[in-house]
Length: 316
Image 1 (cartoon, rainbow, N blue to C red):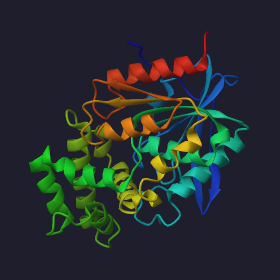
Image 2 (image 1 turned 120 degrees about the vertical axis):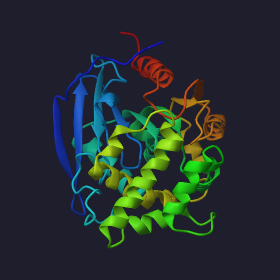
Image 3 (image 1 turned 60 degrees about the vertical axis):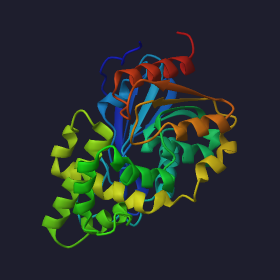
């Protein structure tokens, strides 16, 4: 099984002014003259990490990472309750990606996305197919309303105790009420103690349904925890500002783009059916199903992703 490439540091980094008071952190690693690839991180709100640099051969790729608005090292951070999320939508993030591509002087790039990042990568590719050379999508999601409902309601059947705590933390009596919307209201409320409790409860559910075996240590950071919870609830209670089944409906716009879709057969948070449907409607894509859950850091996910990036860069 292929493994991660060695740890590397960026050779260039900066903050790009993308408007509405936002500056997006970006970095480039690997070979300055290599094949361009951009990593679209998950969440929303997780931010890019050093792990993302290691899915690519640094001798052959020019690897671009960036923190989406409100996350990571981008400014302002959603962990600050004073940070408005009004200008933080899927459309804004797609526009930011194009601004970054232009700023770096890149004509076309491979787009690598995981989890929520696969949704954003797909929307970007459908709007700018001429800018995408290939795609590698790990833990495939389209953030359709049905997927959101499954993640915050349906998946509770596998984790009933955790789900009951999660539902109770939202303060709703009807279990069919929108939990993402309820938590979003709590996280943007005036009481700091209420906000903090809501962020903790939200991230505990994320740990239960996504991480399962090991808690995510990043949730121990109050700033990260608050920013992540605010952004996820903001995006998901708005359905990521996408029409029902929009990505599947518009998959024809991707038909000229080769892609590898990688999904864990044990992924409870994002069932395999979405990746299967997408692959079935996308002639130049292929689906790789591995013995893993949702996390891109699982060995089987890493192995499949590295094989895909190696294949798309060509022989050494």
